[in-house]
Length: 488
Ligand code: 5CA
Image 1 (cartoon, rainbow, N blue to C red):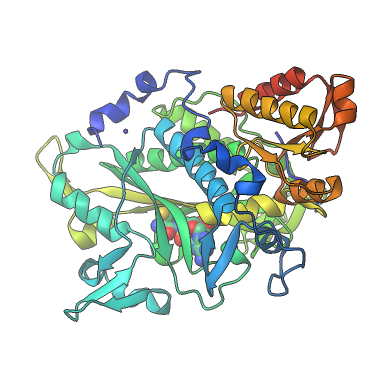
Image 2 (tube, rainbow, N blue to C red):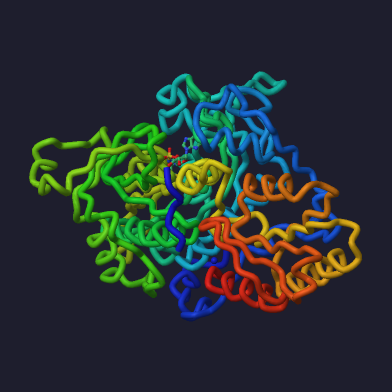
């Protein structure tokens, strides 16, 4: 497996003003501020990085092995993980990108509880339909509760209690919240967990056409989101499962270890979203992106059609495996009918709202990114999600000149808004390099007395392994420049 490619609650009316809130070229944020920094903790001697020398026997796929070995996660129970500091940092960076791209599309962030009452789920009929995957809990009063596997019912309840007019539409709200699905076979670490972090978004629209625009807008927004994480996620026609509806696309990252079998026209992998500006309010622009990215054959095994696949020129037919990192659904009035979520039209008629839901597997993404971007030495984080922007390796801890140069580099990088990790341990160079390679920071600055005599440090790319000597200020400038290209 090779390395992967480098590369608003106000009111509904403010949703329409989204271009005013985010003018083209506006820099939102880099995700650097997701966790407050404590400079002392960014020294390896003060950090908590329990790396494992041995390959854990229980891990069957490379991402799971590397997540355990690099001290990102620790299993707490089957399919349930603690996120250790380094893993939690990456998780927060991924969340930050999701939030920024949702804001860009005009969607409102909110938060719903993980524990819900069974009553709403009885109204929709899903309390029984969901089956064994739903973790059911009784509170002390004997009331049926559950740990939410998804939130269509709760959001529809919020909607029906507060919205009654077409004037408040369109509306899209989302959350990033923990979900629980009591999977029969939790496996591959965070890839198929029982507890997992999901971004789930829900659109409410007056008409089918408006809801399809919301669907298309999500597709565009997701393409951009995954690319910022250094991933190519291909939208593929899929099956809607327990969520329901006819229109659904899954986003798949190609990987040998993926759980889904996929069939596609190889031309689709040439498509890049890039830095194009799309007006998320424009029906035509969103539709055009959807057509561009979905007109070639790309399906999961659930919807695969041999006859249609045969129309793809043979040399372009691909059968592979993929990791599902997201899914978008349009299910019309399934939940609004069941729960009575209606609005009054201009003519005073009461109609059920058209809805869809849209999910991103936030915690699964760590596994997917590692599957797509690693080598035999360890993880290679794409710049967009790396836990630290670069590592500083001191070859001779205790040497005045080397220590002073490392401190100065550290200060210069943090002053430029970057987040470096300084390996200040009293260890052999080989051990320090091995740790940096394992945890996968994309850039490393190596500082040693010999180089310093010539006024240089060494800047090394984790991806290519290439090193270049340059004065410390030049190394800082280069890293600043690299990350400037990765800001939202
Ligand atoms: N309500 C809809 C969209 S919000 C929904 O639940 N969709 S979903 O079932 O497709 O889940 C959304 C995403 O969550 C999936 O694409 C997948 O990336 C992730 N996901 C689903 N199950 C798991 C799991 N057991 N472990 C890790 N991630 C998961």
